[in-house]
Image (tube, rainbow, N blue to C red; front, side, top):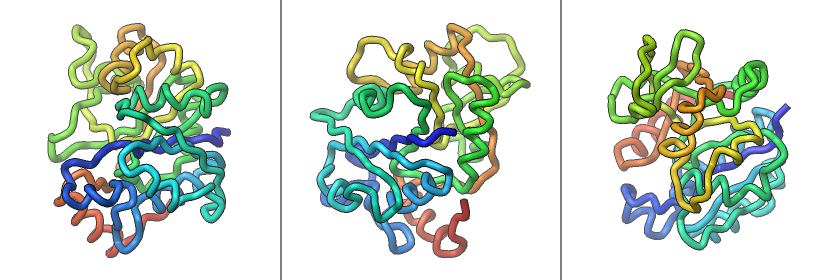
Length: 241
């Protein structure tokens, strides 16, 4: 059973400025509470006991709010970044707090209504190096994650090119599960995207990367419009995990 998770929370949230000039995006209120609190509750409900949060922009505000995680019945540690390292670089930088065990990674600006334990069980049963939760994208605004008939991820944003398989398109809402071996696929760069750099390397090598397809409700707060929609959604019908 996976007990460890990381929340990506270092970004500046520029599309929500000026709100995020003084409030880190994960602490932006949604239906009266910081989104980060919902994320911590989601992880706890999924059997997670230890959480790493990476920090940069207004990071002390997050550390002060969450503390050691005890009030969420979690143990929380922090991975500070002198510069923003992007998603892959942030995970790699936190390796001393994560290495040796499989772990979950979630974005600090989004939330899915699903049972995390089911995703973890799929990941373990398939022997995956990485599992991406994916869902339909009716908007077409997100990079495409393409799965084959066995739910193997074969392409992300058109990479790697050249596959002739009949693939199904989805979007990635910001939840993955990784085996400890993921760090061996990350290369030597300090700043890099996990989806634009590490995943294409995995796929080109035919490593076992799977998609976990869901129709679960999802919210994100990456723009003022999606923040307003997230607030309406959680006020109308709170997520259940």
